[in-house]
Image (cartoon, rainbow, N blue to C red; front, side):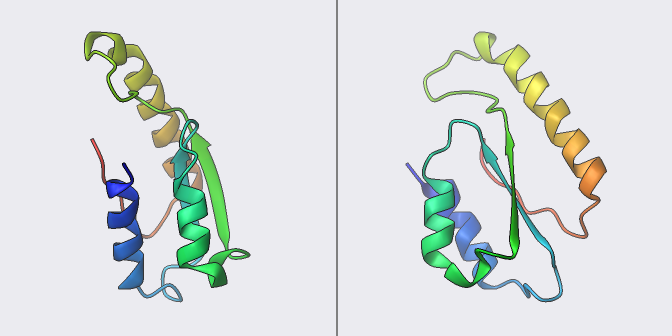
Length: 95
């Protein structure tokens, strides 16, 4: 676990954080590890990051049939968030 978080942290390492500011981080509501990893990897970002929490579309081990509705809900929530923030750049990964 944590592979997707590690990938995102590696992308941040090479990103011009002055150019792409402010920084908005989106995590799933059941993700308890990504924010602590971000804070320990980039303590200088603690006061310059806005964290948004969205519903997770699918839990590990959840069947694809059972994940259709939660995925649609999470996608709609994410689209609304992007429309509201209107970011210059979106970095995302994961299933």
